[in-house]
Length: 238
Length: 234
Image (cartoon, rainbow over all chains, first blue to last red):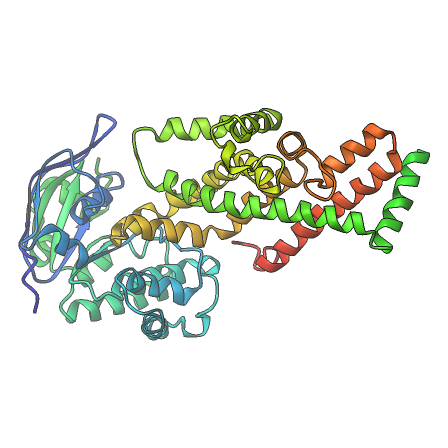
């Protein structure tokens, strides 16, 4: 087993763009078990927080440390974007691409990608252009592409936004399986039902800051702050 | 009007009888232009990808210069290449002036900015799609460039065809550096200029139609090879 990646520690981490604070300052320590769900109103900074933790959003201040060296940590994580990016290639080439980047032989990469396509019920669409897939199929493809390198940490940014019940269930099944195999999930969502189904711990984000960070059971049974209470009730929180 | 009709008849006969001179200058036109296109694409396409992927200090300046160079007057390019290649010029020892090689050099200079500019426009859009994904996957710089060039190949084909169109119809620069020498550097465009000068409009028109047909044929051939019209979305 490789050396542990966690705890992930953020200290006074901050992201600013054009004079506006998107995230932070954030102090956060994430341990190596379970699934973390990030919730909060639109524009609260959920996406920016995830991208910052993942390391694709440059920080303007503060510090972010994995337990292992940064380069290694970056190799061992993956990200699923809210609007999945379809490369202009076939389905199987899309899923195989991350493997080819790390030098896996094309033939083997495509074979493993085909197996994944089967798993997300795109097995009969291997050679279709990925850009022609439906929304749900795109999101499943993005998930398979993120998981094919077997990352230890998977970030997901509202992977089920604008998907219907069936597609959401399929994705949640894959996520639960992935989590049970030991992959650390850090995911944002607007769907409170989904948050309750998947969460072990909850981060409630408001105006770029972490407003509340507690175990899921505690959070959903009785949030500590008035804003979180209001948010769970379905009130508009700003 | 009579000239036009006469020209079409002449073009028809030139083609049907496979006139030896016509075949020779047509092949030379193709050889010069396709060679120039291949060299220019090898320079321009990676350059366009690099300009999309990488942020360096002179990037904006480079892009602005490339865009400006798209309008480079061919005669001036010809003149500069001429000065460099002439006997007393810095590259005079190579003895390239009035050879097809000189014409290729001039054409490469003319179409590199054009191809690079058009290619950069489309690759930039593709990169803004791919940016987060490829960075998230830790793709190296050369892997990013490779992905852009491969996934953007349809758009790059269009850029290359624009370059071909400009080069095959170019006359000013290759006239200056090639010299329009019969059986050596005469190509379709310079032959047309010559025939027009001599007053043989029918012949000039005949060659002109051949030139147009050639341009269309090459475009169709490349599109057909690249399957651009099928699977339209890419």
